[in-house]
Image 1 (cartoon, protein in one colour):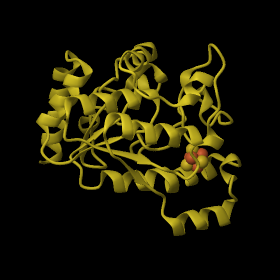
Image 2 (cartoon, helix red, strand yellow):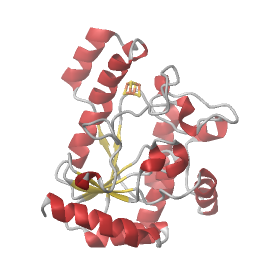
Image 3 (cartoon, helix red, strand yellow):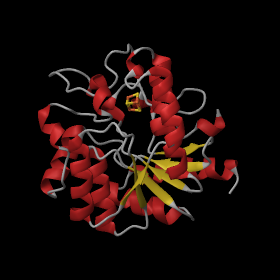
Length: 251
Ligand code: SF4
């Protein structure tokens, strides 16, 4: 399918899926695409809800997670429980050993605290490169971004054409609030990361995530030593630095 055709499909699906329930959005996305679809889960509460929907609908969608080597023990616990309870395999993608060894040699094991460039270098090796392998050859990508996680993410859509990766991307719970997500996992007894009960909202690598205080923005606990509200690890960012939007191919 050409980039123009993929862009048009993304724009059409973005409108059609908006009126559906989240499990129906996943099913419709699966039906609209030919080829592999990969759901990349961080094992946070949003992604656990989506994994439960994929299992419930028995959809032919692969699950993948990026094991950076710096995750919390609680994240490994919920990964194991999710596979057992939902009956799904969550395939692990690891950083390249040679690149990781060179990174640590160059900037130290916790060098990411020293500068934004050092932090991005670590995220590139531990997250962005493994993500590229996870998505290689896929026609579709599913993620658990929500509009109200940050002002930056509020500019996203349900379905986007990711021109750099040549695939369509769906955020099936884009319009859900965090309260709705929590209600969903409680209702369906979906296993969740134990850190959520300790004030951790958005959970990534252990050295780069802290609990947030009441009233703080959801993503305030990620790379909290950096300034601004656009702190992203690069997974959902286009080469020009913007988050990928549905009309990205036409402007
Ligand atoms: S979140 Fe922190 S530890 Fe994880 S890859 Fe990025 S800089 Fe490295």
